[in-house]
Length: 211
Image (tube, rainbow, N blue to C red):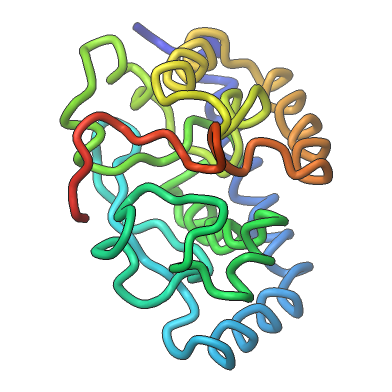
């Protein structure tokens, strides 16, 4: 099913993504450098966590985040699931997660064209392999740094509900909706809503695997 917003609005969205991400990277450069040095100083190299994710049309790409956990965290403890008081999270990592600053390197993904500022969050391959045909519809648009699910509960929602909201976004995309989501993201950011799931543990997706 074609995205509701149409080719014209998608073209404008792509241009806005590139321009805004370049502008934000320029303005935030001192902060990004400071965070990079802080991560290296506290927990060593590398400061950036790189992980394969699945994007639009099922295409794989590497997503960038500031590293907030110890090295090899996905092979330890809860693996790909994260808890609020997870002992794999570093001290600087707790601060970055609290304010969602660990996501800032994804502006590079947006500039490269792998991601959009707004869209379903990029997902792991093992999760996609368990999607139903309906759930795969969330792959019809580029993944985003923020999205409809993020401003309507984020990690506090179970995965099934988040995917439902992502599919709703795919079916109802407009530039106005993107603007609304970005505006609402500011409030979610300031209130630090939905950082973790019920009981302080993020909802696991189906069959957990080492990745």
